[in-house]
Length: 474
Length: 143
Image (cartoon, rainbow over all chains, first blue to last red; front, side, top):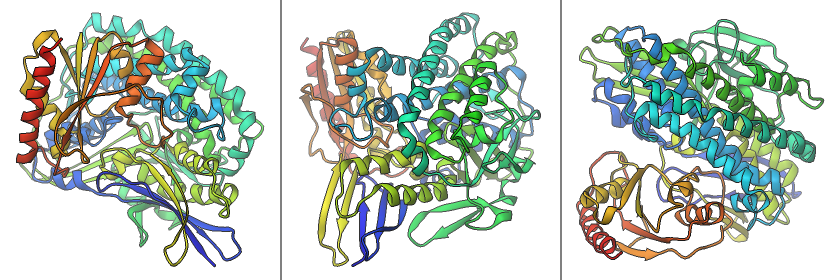
């Protein structure tokens, strides 16, 4: 008898996600689906409001990556004004972006994923958390908190507050960076550098213990998309978009982000409210692509900073690396953190960042503005259409997590087929399903504009609705 | 030192009610300090470590009426680690474990009715906020 296993999170509001695992009559996993209820509330909420309010409004989509929304939104505003952002403002924006990536990746690695790595995927869930990590290594746990604090301190200094800073605006930024502030931020660099050396060394030494996960959690060929500068180096703030395949072959290059609708389309499925973006010229679903750390490490020639480049070279030469394994998102994330710290030091020692000219001013010169940056989870587009008074007629956000939707579904299916025994559900299976999603570090708040926590409830349900088994994680 | 942490998204209507409570309390008596955040995150453990008392104010769909409750130290419960939020009890427990926080931890949960998009708080939620502010002011003065 075919059965459907549902992993159904319970949330306190409309946005939620669930996993359904379909089992065939022979008792094997046949397929799986990752459902995200996408609710485009913020886009509708912004209609009729002045475009210059957008950075502040859009930043409130998320408490983890508000800076990403501010930056993409501000860039869309730049395009509406038709101005060139002064160099000091661009450098501040870049610094802020690196700080954002650093603190977001730190949360993902140290707080969400390190319990799996350090304690084991099948370890007692009572201990498989940050407390278990702290009990094992207090210094490691504190370093994870400290490096997040560094990223947040940069955001606070530049923006005035660490969450939803009112700083990024159309045309530039609002606040000049003071010498004393710059000097204070520089004092964090040595500790951040040391922390990343420890974290990378620790994680690489553990990879041999996760060969099965590397092989069977989201290991499949796909396209990858990311932003590169004119030299083909990693660039989180500006550049052109590049598509590459899992072997590093460039499929499309030099794509202008403001023309994203010419090369990215969205499909719908009747079992999910979230759309499925794909690379248009390859059709759906062949045009599935991934964004985020693994994608960026796949599409770039190099990062452009020495320590990160050394790690990237090693990442590409490791025996089992074909660069299609979703598990390697974690390693790519760490490489990006190293890169971010290196770039932050460069920017902080650049005297241009202290300049007082921080904003270009103009009136509405274009009725369409599209801003694109690399958020921690991948490429983020903000697209605004305005009237001649600058009031928003239409807003469209293409979130990184949405772009990974197809790949996350395939990852869930592959993981379930290998690790889930429908006859005996175990906590370790549940953890591996979650771990599959954690590779992508999805921001379900951004995708769903939801609030609150998302516990998981895995149910084994017979076709007549009878509950046969259940595992709940609050 | 007493710290008050208000949690919530001010553009999700009643979810931002904790921030409104903080506004009602200003200026804070007794030398207390306050922090307004979108969500609770691990590094807050470092901020509360030297406090004698900490109070976390948050909207809660399951709350019936606003009241202050003392949090007991709890070991972390197994929970999904997909979301980027950290429960209040976990922030406190982290502070105790990693930084030796030995103060009192309290929570004030506010009942909410509307979590849609917008910045207007529902009238009944505002009423609850005023009640909460009175309770918290009384609590602050008992030091």
